[in-house]
Image 1 (cartoon, helix red, strand yellow):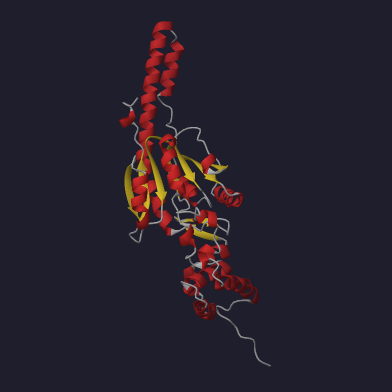
Image 2 (image 1 turned 120 degrees about the vertical axis):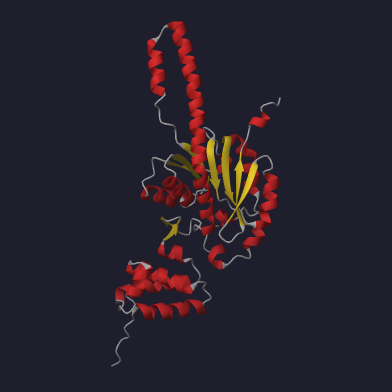
Length: 336
């Protein structure tokens, strides 16, 4: 009687990498490592510290179906149900866009610019407070109301309000959650039109206990009307054209939500809408950070947002990736 083969971690690593490579899967070794880490509940380093460890029948039974899904080019993040983004772990599935490293540049830039917006908000509140105190003093002089002076003194110790951030097309919530975690003085409105995506978004927000700082709205952004202008707006909108979608790898076009990738037109629909609405949605000096499709779209976006101060931020591959827009209204103050 032939003895049943014992599969060690190293055996599975080697065999599975060759199997996925033969199926045309990119980064096969990384994919297999990811699947094994999920199966064994361990880190990548632990895999190689226990490379001669035999895998049990139950572990193999859990691993094999995941390997087969990856073999038909389903993204490994969907197979294991999670991914890392900006140092945080997020639940993902086929209803949301899988967070990309390029989007981390958007978050990184927003975090870097946040202190500037916090200071600007504090200055606005200080100015408003001073005007309020002047009105109170005037009222006190006229009415002799001592209580008004007391109220003015209390106002001087009021903590500045957090900056307001709008995340358009929030999806899994990776941008909103990362910003909330790295900008403590922020309140975020996350707008998402897909009901399926909203369920994933809610799960990720609750996992990080951010329900009190991230307000989720299930709404089409084109129907959304802000209650007040924002200090910062961020978005990774659908920017792939309908024609380009036909050329994408199956791991993207077949498994990720079409509406999160493309506007089914020229890839510029949402930017055109933003160009018309952002002047009303941003405070004076407010910032908008928009991810886009790279160098081929830069000129069109610069022209579209010609009414804003602009800055282009490159991704880690040195391709144009984020357009940073600053809204200014003071030049319009002398108009009709």
